[in-house]
Length: 551
Image (cartoon, rainbow, N blue to C red; front, side, top):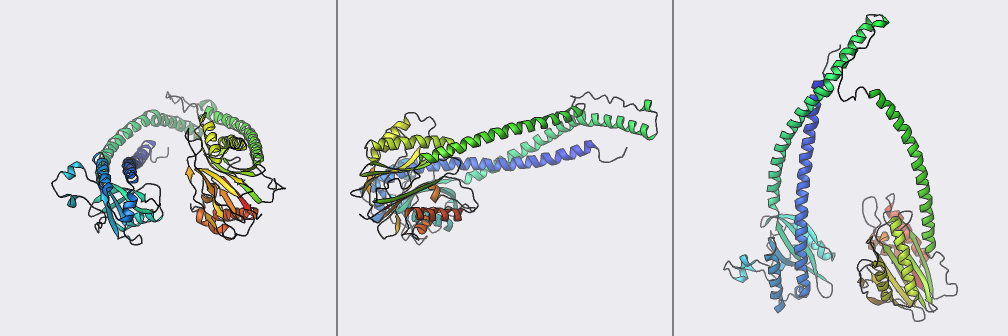
């Protein structure tokens, strides 16, 4: 028998090696998950405190105080509410700041700060405890990268809360939560901030690592010991016996023993039977392969059936949308064109346009939450409801209100749809519209550039019962164009994970200010496709353009 490294030694080395790797991996991953878990809790807590503080600033029109650099009587009332927020929260700091010069990150000034009862009971004068409007922030209070993030939040008029980790010599390792403050003119004028000391996270992680490593070493040693005993009993010894019997048989063959002497002695293996059933398992594997191939055929046929049904669903959905853009051959007051490119076989976006009567044209652009068949079914129901209610002569706001009520009656799937719905009085060119959480429309006045029209948004349809919707009049004039779209246009993403965005959309449109709606939509689709390149289309892409002809 050729000698070499035995199975016992090889198994021992392999067990120690891989258990060591497993232990280190578990410790590393556990440490990372532990830190992420703690940080998630801190971020959630900071966001909750920030929400209460931001509501207080809105309540007392604090944005106007910052814009005017003024401290009216409500200033101290606001401070009292912020003090109460801080007193009931486990945070280090609660304050508001603003940039005296938005282009200079070091022009940061305090607008207000909050203190707990314990901090106020130190006996120090309030002028030393409180930071009043106009007091410059400490030079080393924020790192430059933190200041740039805060500056960008104000510049971009961010509507969402943000969090970031930062370190300064003055305050140490902090988690900073911030929210942009707006004045009554919707100008971003400052930020409300909360800070939580997270330096104790590092201490918790150090303790965690020590405990995990100790437990891991002990557990690894125990597992390796049990593993080696089990290997010896159930694998090494049986294989050695099989090897000995096989070696004896081979030697008989080498010594030209008589056939009757070529007896393969019983190895006496009485384990759980895996070694004896090896041949049967090979046959079982072959049977499994045959069964697998049969199953593949069945699955393929089923997929073809599903594909056929999805193609039919796609055709049905496409047929439900207006696709003949000369639907009104006797009407020369407007020119309209629309398109929808679903991300899957069927989509959740939809558009619609229809004559309510001889003098009123209804226009719809909508985006259902989700994709695929569920979104398509929800889309069909929403489209039918909106059109039927519009044909009854209801105003845009009333149509959305009644549609929302109908959907919310039995919406166990909790789906919703964003809708822009407008009704144009053709004779006067006046257009009333309502926006239920949809994208801003884009308008072009006669011989002008395309611009984003930031209309009044209401809540989505299907999200909450008993909703009321705001109605407004859109400035649509002769020679102008109205462009509606879903977020599949602006959120189209290329391989570098960059969004197409509203700015690129407007840039493309303003290169084709004289184009008719069909040409305009074709140019936009081509620009989006070129931008996305080989990246997958993740959302439905739907557009509608209407040009108002001169009387």
